[in-house]
Length: 419
Image 1 (cartoon, helix red, strand yellow):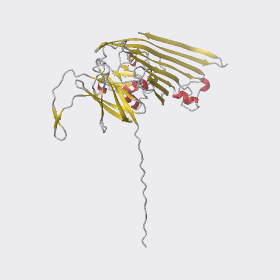
Image 2 (image 1 turned 180 degrees about the vertical axis):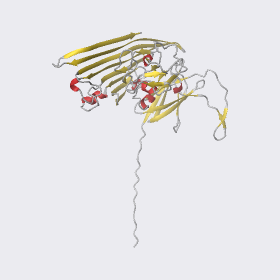
Image 3 (image 1 turned 180 degrees about the horizontal axis):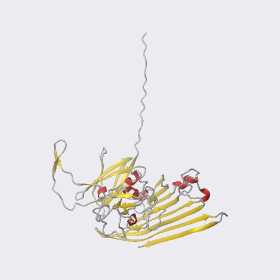
Image 4 (image 1 turned 60 degrees about the vertical axis):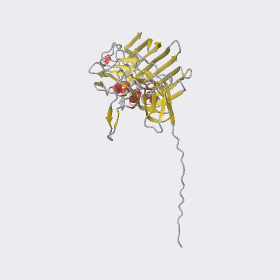
C-alpha cells in the first residue's frame, strides 16, 4: 500500500514598513544670499523619481524619504549644478541651505562619447561643496567640512580641530590636546570664529593665550557646514598667523519641535529645537555634561581619581521679520574643574602626587546679537555686537605633617573682548 507524505507549507506575508522622513531647506545664491526660485531639487538614486521645484522664497520639501544616507541634486539655468551628498535621514528632519554659484561665463555646449560609443551632450559643471569655501572671498588654502565628516572621522571625537589635523600640511601636537599646527606655524596663531565673531578659545580646560585644550565646547548638533583656512587668508580675517576655523551655527527647526538625547565619550547631551512661530522664528539649545564625571560618581574606575567635570551650553535664536530684517542671538558657555587630592590618590594614578592638593577651575563664553537687512534684492548689511571672556584659576596646596594646608601657589587669570 503506497504511502504519501503530505507536506503543508505555510507562507506568511510580512508587512514591511519603511521608515521615512523629509528633506527640506532653502536654496540661496552664494554671493547675495537671496533665495532662488524655480530651482529643481531631485533625490538621487531613487525610484520612482522624486523631484520638486523651489517656491518664491526659495524653499523646497521632499517628503517620504527613506532613512539612511541620501543625496540630492539642485539645478537651475545660469548656476552650477550642486550635489549634496552624505545627507543623514533619520529621526529628525533634515534641513539644508544649499548655496548655488552663478556661472559668470557661459561655455559652448560640447559633445562627448560615452562608454557605449554614443555621442551625448556634455553635462554642465557639477559643483562639489567640499571643494568650495562658504566664504566666497577665500579662493585658495581653504577647505570646507561638513558635520557628517566631523562625526564620522576615526579619532575625531566630534572635534573639528582633530578632523582638520588630517588635511595636507596640518598636524596635531599630541593626541591628548587639539592644538593645530598649520604649515609649520605655532598653534597660538590659530583663530576661532563663530558665525563671524572671533572667540578666545572654544575648548574645555583652556588656559589664557592658548587656542586648544582637551575637549571642544562646540556641539556638533548645533553646527552647520564650516570652513578651515590654512593660509592666504581673506582680508576680513585678522590677528591670525596660522589656521582659521570659521564655524557656522545652524538655525533650529522652524516647523516642528524636536528633542535629542545622546551619550558619548564627550558627554551626556540634551538638544531641543523648534519654532517660536511656525515657519518663521526658531530656537536651538544644546546642553552637555561630562560623562567621565558621571561614571566616576557611580564608583566605576576611569584610570584616575581626578574625574574632569565640565559642562557647556550652545544656543541660537533666529527671528526673521518682514521689514526690519533678521535678528539672531547666539552664544556658547562652558564651566569646568578638576581636583587632584591627596586623600583620593591612587598609586597608579599618573596625574596625582602625594602630599599635594591641586584644584583647577576655568570657564568662558561668548554671546552675540546679529542683524541682517537687505537694502536691495542683491545688497545687504550685517551688523554684529558681541562679547566673550575666558577665566582660569588654580590653587596648589602642600600638606604639612600636622594636616594643616599650606598654600604654595594661587593664581587667577581673566581675559575679555568686546566688539
